[in-house]
Length: 137
Length: 124
Image (cartoon, rainbow over all chains, first blue to last red; front, side, top):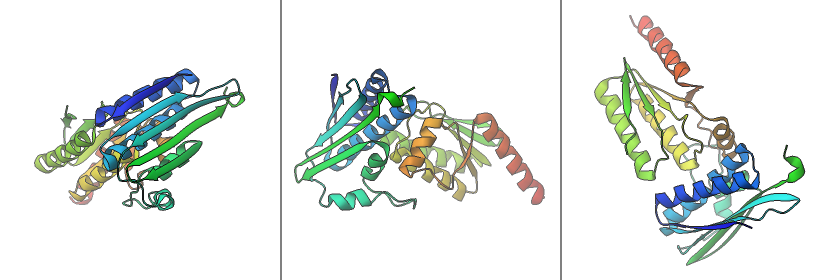
């Protein structure tokens, strides 16, 4: 279905990706809380790319079908890569304030799925939010 | 564009109306602390009613700012958090424990005035 590609080279890119995400999620039929989850996840992922890789490409896709509404978020960057993906997923998720990781555990809590592929020079983070249409009011 | 910081008696009110870049957020933090130090305010309200998203970076800035204000002997209160924002912050594990919050500007100002009034009465 719909797809939008946003270059994230600076903070304006993060804001653009968030706005595009908000619109796509709304059109797909997500409620306002889910929209907030999706935009927050987009913010975390694009900010990661900006901080660790000086930027990246954010691709938003509406993959909805007649059973599910679904928005996919994919962020590609050409940074140094994540040396230990398991560690990155463990770090950062802590209730101890003052300990901050990459934000990936946050995204895994907000969205339905999260897949990370990374090697030096190329990292792809793919995440999606799905809801069964019968779960929506 | 800088976040305006307004004086209301012995309180400072800062209302974040736009999405902040990293630089903007840090500048807000600096501006607020400088203003607190210079103005000898007794309380600060940070109003985020206009924000429909707060990501972990901004949550950290807000948390830090409140703590820094408190270190300067001034009470900080965060108000106006939208329900969806509160929900996602808790889900993220970034619910800013230790930051005093109130529902809206009215309640924030009221609670600060009461707290400060009590403190002044106690210390004569």
